[in-house]
Length: 117
Image 1 (tube, rainbow, N blue to C red):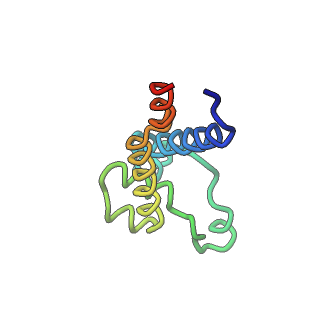
Image 2 (image 1 turned 60 degrees about the vertical axis):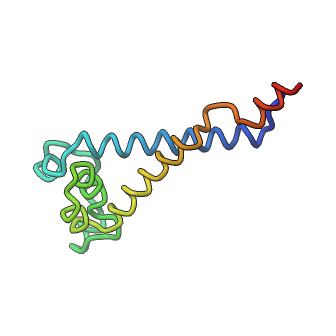
């Protein structure tokens, strides 16, 4: 049975979402926010908006916040940037849905039609 292009596009999108969720959550567990602040781990250059104006932009603190969430430091993550808390739970939701639907396996409909045919 041939699978449609749409089926493969959906699989690709799920693969991309699951890969990036695993990378973000794995990174947040592996790196501590203390090591970022101490300069032991340098991920990116300092925020150009913060350097130029002295005021943090909307995404300042998201990386440290995600790392704090990975270490179960909820209040600290919220203090870094509230968006980090939302992103962390969004990534957990993507992994949960990916595990529930398991898009890497063949669908039940295609396996049932093979059994009947």
